[in-house]
Amino acid sequence: MSDSALPGEISARPAGSAWLARLVASRGFQTWAARFPLTRRLVRREGEAMFDLLAGFCHSQVLSALVQLGTLDRLMQGPLSADALALHARVPPERMQVLLRAGVALGLLRQRRAERFAISRTGAALTGVPGLPQMIAHHDVLYRDLADPVAFFRGEVETELADFWPYVFGGEMDGAQAQTYSQLMADSQRLVAEDTLATVDLSNVQHLMDVGGGSGAFLAEVGVAYPALRLTLFDLPQVAPQAEARFARAGMAERTEIVGGSFREAALPEGADGISLIRVLYDHSDETVKTLLARVFAALPEGGRLIISEPMTGGARPSRAGDGYFALYTMAMRTGRARSAHEIAALCEVAGFADVQTPRARRPFVTSCVVATKPSA
Ligand SMILES: C[S@@+](CC[C@H](N)C(=O)[O-])C[C@H]1O[C@@H](n2cnc3c(N)ncnc32)[C@H](O)[C@@H]1O
Figure (cartoon, rainbow, N blue to C red):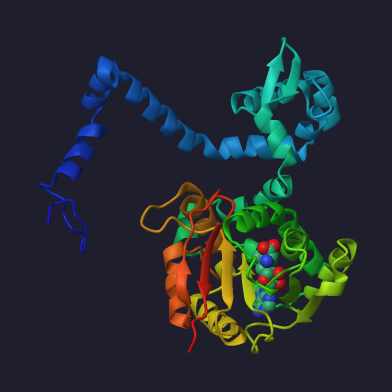
C-alpha cells in the first residue's frame, strides 16, 4: 500500500493511471500542454468542460429565472428591448441585462442590436417541450435538497422532495394533493409516451393494463396509436379517478376501465395480455419492485408482455442524465433508485419473465425501455 493510501484502499502504484493522473494534475505539465501546439486545443476544450461543471448551478439558475419570470414565453411573441423585459419581469434594468446576456451566452436567447433580445432556436424548442418549464420550476425543491452535497451524499439531509411525492410512502394524501402531483407527471408524459411507443410494438397486444398509470396520460397516447386496444388503468384509489375525465375527453371511455388499488397490498387484476409500468419502478425499493414484478407476472397470461419505461442509469457506462441526474433525484426521494436496463432485466428474470429485451433508447434522458414475456409453463 502506498503512503497516501487509506485503509482498505488499493494502491495504484506503480500502475500507469495514478502516475498519469499526477502528471496531468501538475502545474508544470499543464503550463507546457497549454503552450504545446498539439495539445493546446485539447487543453482549452478540457478547461472549458471543467468550467462548465463548476458553473453548472449558475447556468441552471439562469434557465430557471428566464422560465419563472416568463421571459422566454414573452420573447416567443417577438423581440423586445431589455427595458421592456425588465419592466414585465419587475427586475431592475441593470440586473435584467446581466440575466439576458447570460441567456445569450447559454444559447437560450439572441441579442439583436445593442438593446433588443430575441428567443433562440433552443429557447423556442424549450418552451415547446411539454412539462419542461414545470419541471424546471419544480427544481427549486431538488436544489434545496442538494444545497449541502456532502451531507446529501452522506444521507444526513431530510430531503424535501420526499414530501413532494408522498404517494411513494404508501398513498397518504388527499385527492387535491394527488391532482398536483399527477399533473406534473402528466405534463411530462407526452415525450415519454412518444419514445416508448416508438421503441415498443404493441400490435400483438389486445388489452393493456397500465399499472401506476397516474391520470391516464400514457394510456390516452396509446389509445390514439392503437385504436382497437382495450385499456385498463390501475393506480392508488386517490389517483386513479383523475383519469376518467381524460378518457372521456379523448373519446375513449367505452374501451377503458379504471381500477383503484395498491400493488403493495394485493394481487393485480387479471385479464390484460400486456402490462406497462411507466416511471413506476424507480420510485421503489428492490423489495417492492420484486413484489410488484411477481404480481405482474401472476396477473399476465402465458405469452403476456411486460413493458417497462423510465429513465435508467448507464450501468457499466455511467450516463450524464441517468447517473448525473436521475440517480440523484431518486436518492432525494429516498424510497427508490434509478436502475440500469441490465439491473431491471435481471429483476424481470427473477420474477420468471423470459425473452427480456433492452432496446436502444431514442433519447435516454427522456426514457429507456425493457420488455419481457411470460413464458409458457
Ligand atoms: C412517477 S408516477 C408515474 C405516473 C405515470 N405512469 C407517468 O409516467 O406519468 C408513479 C405512479 O405510481 C403510482 N403508485 C405509487 N404507489 C402505488 C401503489 N402502491 N399502487 C398503485 N399505484 C401506485 C402513483 O400514484 C403514481 O401515479
